[in-house]
Length: 274
Image (cartoon, rainbow, N blue to C red; front, side, top):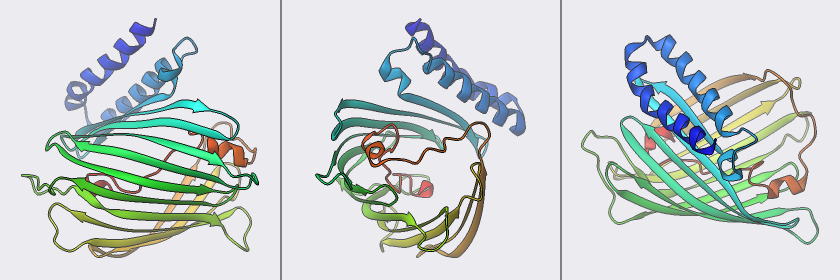
């Protein structure tokens, strides 16, 4: 059974590029969505080993090209007050493949009011063999989160033949907290700076938004972003969740569990994905 599940997932990933080429865009999106759901359903079956249940696969289409991604998050050791885990991702996009693997450690403070965390990651662009590493820190209360990451290239910055950029050096800082006045509303702010393989001056930018939840299924996000490469842009996102919704408030102990709160790093090696 285990071998059959893995073989099914591999077969889907192999056949998808050929199938998408023969179909129209709308049909391709539908097929990618079906394959994503079917693969994850196969992986998460109760008879599968724990490590496979903590792995997800995603298929998609972007600019008439196949996109796929594999995410895995594996707890190594957990107690009521501490946790150690591994987190990794393999992503194929724009005919390029980027992989990353890292580990994290989180612990609960003595007063049970904060969860603190440290993490480290290694990234590689398979096409160019460009490499970088990052170190990051996290702090969570029941309602507020602060995350920071510093990225550093291993070796020289690499320029791609097609003119695309690799974001290798830089930092990001993100804060998310409840709004002081309005109920069911959250504020977030992100600032970042990075050097790419094709730019001389560092790219700096910021993004801020306000999120409100009118009911248990609808989320409304209004925000703005700006960088040295683009003028200020205003955006509005509406998210509706079908099916059941968990109304239970997240407890401070939930922040220890990597399955509930993943390590977030704000920009990928491919600068256009950031």
